Length: 203
Image (cartoon, rainbow, N blue to C red; front, side):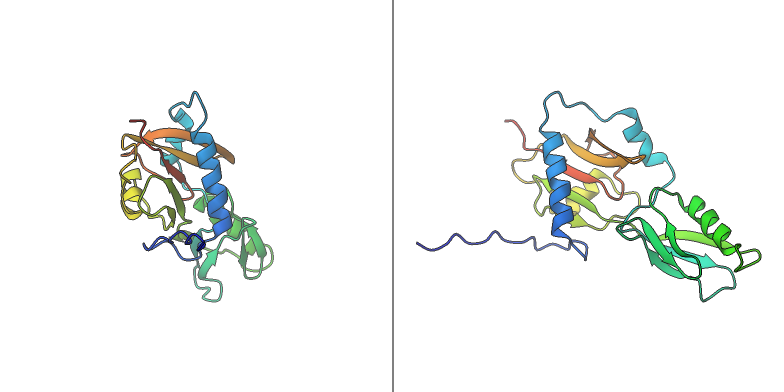
């Protein structure tokens, strides 16, 4: 008897640096929570998160500009521990911080014996990825772009499968350091780092 063939890999354009362990963990969390009985729509804090200042986390890449300091200006990635390695001052905590907060933190560190009055500005150069699972053409990890909606994410992942529930989806999201899951419509915005789960329709 011939061994069963291995399942085909997605042929779309997932984000580079795909990590199977991270994807598996995200998928398991989404599937487990989505399958719970008594599942409720997303709470208020879940929706408010999309209008709050962006908070950095592992996988984000930022462009840091220090005025008249070419040796310090450049792009820096938030590592898995939530830090960026910045010249002169070393490891700087970035996870959970807004861009404005990080600007102030780096400027304050540079004032400690390095620069008299540093002018620091920061912008997101590349957002961390989002995950999409369930009834889509090509589940996986994809690059996030500011302003994306659930519909955009589904389109990137090859559209709905023939068995998909197309009315709403489940999203797992980190809010203020806590993992929350809620049910939203397909027109709702998503955030970098979200895990989107497309359920199978019941009939």
